[in-house]
Image (cartoon, rainbow, N blue to C red):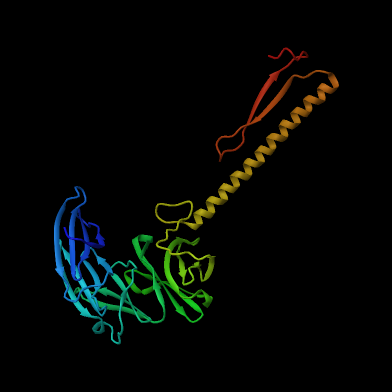
Length: 341
């Protein structure tokens, strides 16, 4: 096996074959098929790309990938079917009129789409029904794109943060329908923070049960900002060297999403239980104190415990969330305190 610079792993969709794609030399692309159960190498194919390649690779589906040639002016569409590699090259200028300079593929993971950056533009592509690349949108000004996430009813969405003067615009797009804006907010931003470098989005359920989205952005000065409902709700000013990935979680965690309403409801129930338990403990202590005061008063007046019954009150707990029941024990006493029955 030749020396390989691994670029992409493609998980099996139906069979048990994992494909590993990588480059060797200046222009060879290799695909290795590995049985995930046995680890055996069962397929291998290689192609020579006449114009070379860059190290960036975007996965569109389990059978299609996109890369750039060495000059970064040609898009190379790679097909992978049954372990065999095919490719097709197309100059970016034919797809994006006015293109100039060199392009860069963004690392954002978008199902069925990919994003390319050149100069101050970000261009979104997808594959049409004929298997050809087509432009979905072209965004001016500095913009960054998040990975795609899943939310209610197995839908997918991704976020775009775009600079507009002294403000940044946070948009959330529906994965299968780019023209549908799930969210669009403008947020005032201090220009001293520089440009947005990365964005990570997260979804949650609002109290009205509608889906909501928030974004964690990494600024040029390496500060972190959490954007939600058109405002900066949290920030961390101390610079971080690099943020590779972000996972957000709220407690309690649900199997199918996070509900803010249930979090609030659970907190109120927890608070009520603890208030009731505190009141029960106070009542138990008060009754116990009164009982001992009664005993001491009788001893001080009579020199012994005289009475038919003495009530001993002992609080005990049934778990952290339980109440405080009273355990009442009756001791029958006669006039002689040494004869307790």
